[in-house]
Image: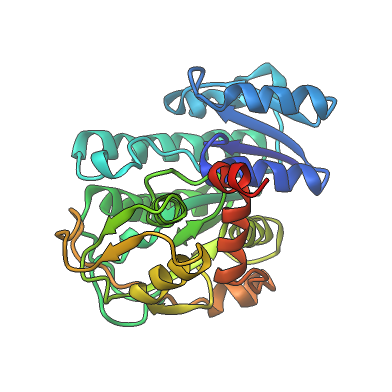
Length: 315
């Protein structure tokens, strides 16, 4: 298959590219020209002998990729992982967030012109907003942040447009993915780094339910959904281990050898409020024949083994 991937240097994007290459697909990875990860992908391009092609294109220009000479006017599938302002600092910025709706719709148009039959968009659990119940794909959505609101708007508008274009539209609502390569400021990465070094962390109450999915499993779910014969629709991409956030933090602390200290109730909620994650994953698991293979403990152990501090101090 000839597959276009936008946002290819992101945490999930890089892992998706590697997975697709392992499956022997021809991958066209669209990256910002100034992306810090561009060099690594270009190294992969040379090593794969043409199986991977890096396309230095801003997200705002992805709607013109059907005219890029490297694609030769054809592709089979499109995986849209690109999104400006996904960091917490910009999630409430309406101007930055709203631009992404147009980028996604333009990318969908380019996918149709290239002959793609399936288009997968990376949405977010933020589309649900604050809820205490089970998060089902057909549950009412009340997003709080501009990030969640605009991801939900893409779901509505791209779903309609894809129907007109005759493309299968897959809208994934991705929950908390963790693993090596994640942002250093994510909760899991921060905990592993701080606890291994014997530092101190302060949290909010952390009594809400949470759900984590290891990066390798997340990529298997996303690519499996893209490559399967699953119908258009919304799919939660999440793990099968939902429990209070405090339990996850305590497990990280234990796996880091009990080093470091932490306190609860010391930080206010973030801009999106106190979110409790309790996803229903049945639809994805049935559509892509997917089950997570890596437990939270196994995932944290792999993160620890890949951490520079651990490697330096275990020689």
